[in-house]
Image (tube, rainbow, N blue to C red; front, top):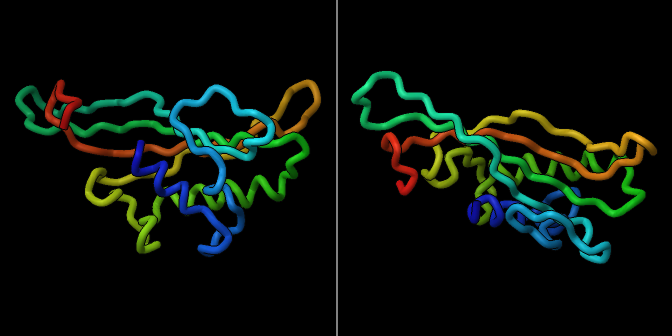
Length: 148
């Protein structure tokens, strides 16, 4: 999670991004932010799926679903949210120091793949409440060993 928070902190217009999302708060599993802190980012892990092919396999593939939630101030336009989503997606696969594409997160992951992204809209008012980018990180561990 720390590696992804560092990558998201690199989202600055001075570094070639469309927005300055990296200047706001970036927290793991946040519930809410104060209005003056917005926009802000939250990184949340979801469900880890594990596939073991045979009984004595030494390493098993994990697929951990993660979500970056973009907490927005009221009145954020769909156009701006699309730019924010694009920035988040680019940052997730970019080394924060070199800017090079690195979906293996410096060797921590086997690979990552996009899952879903888009706005979260309030049903009563159709106002954009937040944005979300969901992705899956693939990594190897020994069976029943989450400490690797």
